[in-house]
Image (cartoon, rainbow, N blue to C red; front, top):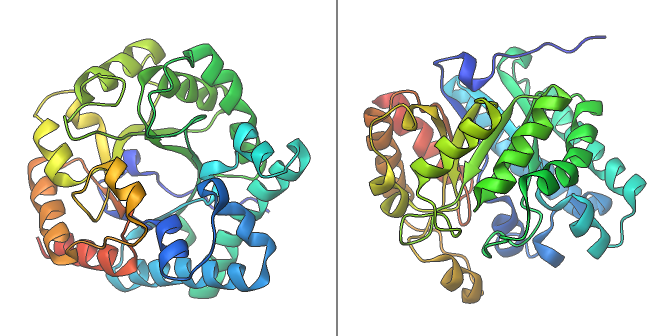
Length: 313
């Protein structure tokens, strides 16, 4: 039976919520070890799988209560070839885990009663290398070839779209956008900014978005910002055609830089009320933004406050 096809964020003015910092929640709130910062393998453990279902149910219930759409960004951030091999997965096993992740969300949708027409299942892609290193050796062609494997799996698993998170260079973004386009899946490209308000590769956010659009003939459905704090990425935004392409925000809870956050050894949850107010202010200035969630340090409490602040405004 054909599954309902929801409107995607770039096809709607409605607000969509998504989840928070899944990996940091699993590590610091539930005590799971994440080798290679990878969460997908936890689906092999019954106790961990139950925790993951609880995690996503909490977000889904917020979307139901607030009457918003919801985007499940899959646990597959590290479920690509190179990372999979480090965890002992061959191509077949890795494809199976990608399918399991997306099937989990369909179970949650049925359990909590999310309206299918407001529910998006997105295949989540992370960088080929470390998100906090420059990875300059990866060309657009190399990125397209590498990521096309995971994107093909998402297509087979009936994902509605692809979301690439924590990208720090335009070449990889171009490759992912082209691979998704060839597979017939819409893509959301999400960049991460450093304290200097640039990508680690040195480009400004405007330069990165304009470069990807020029190289792909505007292939991404929209762009996002994640794994940065509004204090860092907010000043990088300005009115213009390029910023109108940004529809999503998934901010870190903390203002600390990436290097410091990685070395802390504990969770920095920031101030959820303050973060919600910052989202509300950004939405007021950039009306086309309609995808809102969190990244490192955030959970359902942050996203609920964000959703309520946006709807109240």
